[in-house]
Length: 201
Image (tube, rainbow, N blue to C red; front, side, top):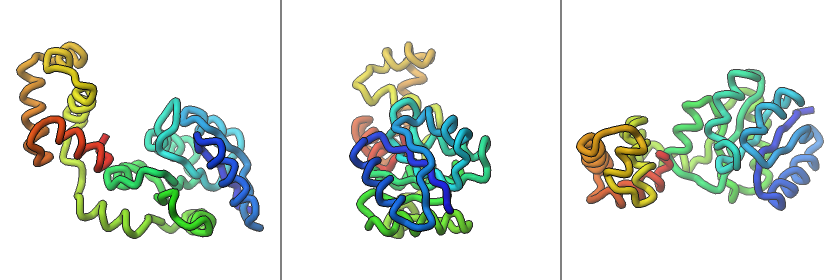
């Protein structure tokens, strides 16, 4: 029997997935949670073979959970299942050690098959997402540039960002200029939109 942990914050979706997976003769959902910061503790408690994890979870992102789960319970394979099929998310998930990445609008039977395949050592990625991720390429922004862009996301001025990140205003302006150039955007609003669309932050 394949032991599965399910992390999904939408109650109806989680219940449906539990029902769907438990109908399979060789699958058993041994734990479920609606919070990202609860995934590792529940995994250590129940020792699943595969963790099916959403990206957008309260408490902690599913992408952030992958590395910890990989380190604390290396026998557990991680399969990301999300609404957000963004190229950057695929790359970040795979770089963190995820074994698979599916979008929620995939046919239901594909999830059970993907669980079996990742447990067998395969990498499972939605083909369309894989193609898009390759076409978009890697995230061109550094961690610091992503911090500046995330701070700018809420309409903060250069002065606001400088205070928040303990930088000078000139340094912030230089970062924003570099971000715009690297993303091929016309301004920072367009850079933010492109970064979000590609799943870079």
